[in-house]
Image (tube, rainbow, N blue to C red; front, side):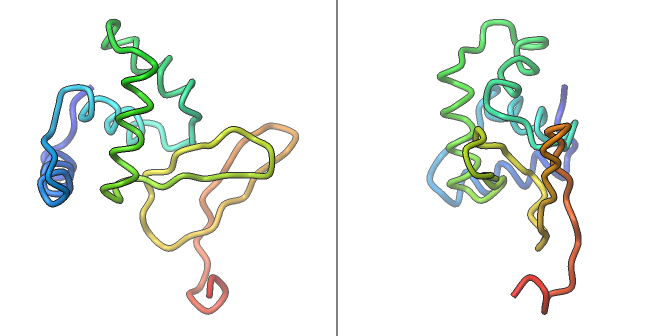
Length: 115
C-alpha cells in the first residue's frame, strides 16, 4: 500500500509542522485509513496493516494513530460505549451509526445544520 503523492506531501508537511518525521509505519497506517474509509477501530487497522507489514505491533498502530490525530490528519469518532473509530475525512461532516450492522457512514450536511 503506497500513499499517493498528494497524501504523502500532506503527511510529511503535517508531521514536519509538529516537529516529527515521517516513518514507514506512519505512512502505512495513514494509507490503510485512506484505502477503505469505513471508520475502523484500532484493532481493525492493526489487522489490515499486518497484511503488508507483518512485523508491525499493536502498540505501533496506536502510536501512529495518536500521531495522526495530533497532526490533524485523522479524527477520532466515538459512539456511546463503542470502541473508538478513526476517520480520515477532514471535511465538515456528521456520522450516521447503524446499530444493527455497526456501519458508520459520513454524511455531508449544510454548515448551518452542523453549527
